[in-house]
Length: 458
Image 1 (cartoon, helix red, strand yellow):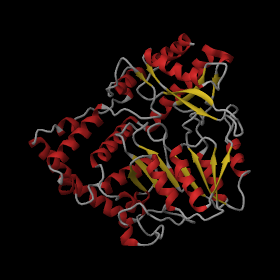
Image 2: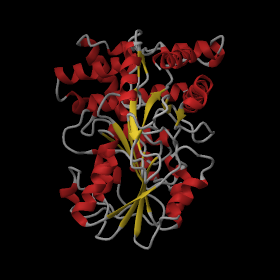
Image 3: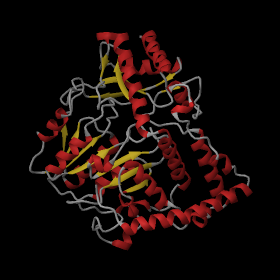
């Protein structure tokens, strides 16, 4: 773990105390304006296991925190999440306060809007230092900042998997077309996942003298497979390569410790499984230890004050990326409220529940469809997630069948989406699959209903 900075810690404590009084003042002002801030501050906290009769009661309490339409079982968290009531209230309060007094956030929270405290809070939750984490608009925003901030030259090679999202592929293709950077796809296992060495060996076999970086999705958006991020980053460090992780689907679904993962960069969303407002995300930039890659903060409002690449480890690199013109402070604050709720429930407990539901769904699909369906998502410890890709038809390349199935399920009250991808790198046609998200506001009865609905439509 990178060494901390005692001076920085002291500053964080001072800022926390100072901003406590400022937030208290804002709450008082909100009450005077009739904004209902008190309703948020008195929001009920999750009960402990000892205060409920069983785990079913506990998760029912969690599900009651959401305002999802009871007539639709929403199972498309991979696209966007749903804010809990507590987060909605917080978001609404801050928006109203900001609209009444557009300068309120600065006058009440200070010139930096309390963002030092937000970043310190995130750092504690995600296993890193405050100078290594900042708030962004989404995963794509973070990946743009990273890919375009690193130094690549003509002939340099970046290894990616054959299941990457367009949010990563877009800036990578700019590097390819503008600077002559080489993008090499690594085929990762899809239908035959057994252990992490399959992924590590696939990358290691592709590393050449020109390879400068690897980029991969921690959880692939196409099949929901969880890649062995720690092992892949260890390989990158051993080979002297930069490691960039697309973590769009990880925060809010699984527990994360960036220092333990050992990556150089990690871009993630706040609006998906973390259930924050839209246009929120987090970005981790390693800023301690050895062999820090040169990084240019070209999309920062502070670059004109530095006019150089940052001397990594000596500056608060995340701070420079935090300030990019006018920020959506209400959204950032609401996303932090969602993170606080997750911490109260317990991120480890959430991961166990969400991935447990994912495993239950996969088992139910196998039991119901047997060999007539194709399950593209592994159901193994360390690999399974809350995303499940499944095709119930014999022809997995027929797009019309899957899109019709998605529409039919929606009519039956289940909202899912489809994905398409190459199973093997050299495949001439894409495979298609239903992509089903199971999260902390779902239960086994809803999964049973979905599986029966798929069978009925089929």
